[in-house]
Amino acid sequence: MIATTLLRELRALDPDLAERWLAAREEPAAFAEDVLARAGGPLFDGYRASPKS
Image (cartoon, rainbow, N blue to C red):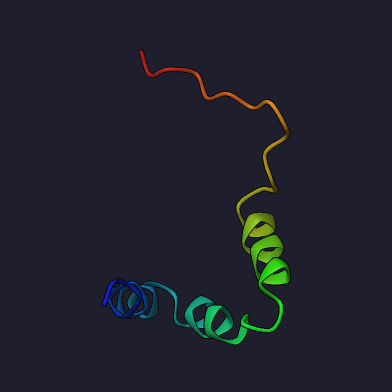
């Protein structure tokens, strides 16, 4: 049920991303790399977010 709701919300926000997510069953790592690249790339090992002030 959660996956259905997530997919519904994702389709409403970004239909292309939703379809690529569904198609990623064969290569989930490639999908993850694409999503991270669109967001500025992966974080490096040891990354720590600063606490909000």
